[in-house]
Image 1 (cartoon, rainbow, N blue to C red):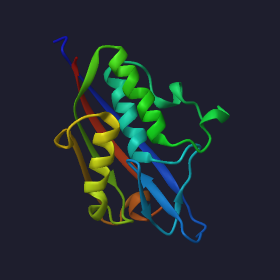
Image 2: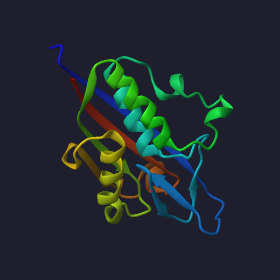
Image 3: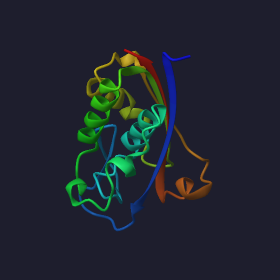
Length: 164
């Protein structure tokens, strides 16, 4: 079937356990208050990173590390939404568009549910798709593993691309 491609992405970032005043994390372009920051070369938007990996994977174009290596100083502290814009243009140039994207955030903290609508709005705008094409869910691991111990966040993303 030439008109449909599916891609999966996963990303994980650990928390910087040194508490900082006014610290926060970014998920899907939305700033969420939290006692710790996520460690990363860019802004640490683990959700957007998993989404970009899924988009790139659907077209067999490698991963975000290939396109935006953490050894390249141009990407230090960059907004992941800027990178998402580059990936979006890349899939458009290849003749594809987003059918839908489904993401699951795995985190014991912070609570994600109050921010899901804002994340979906942010991503739908960034991808120029309807909001009903973006699904964001969150779960805990019942205090098991690194996410359960509040050491970091993991995100799983699945994207369906359709030919434009």
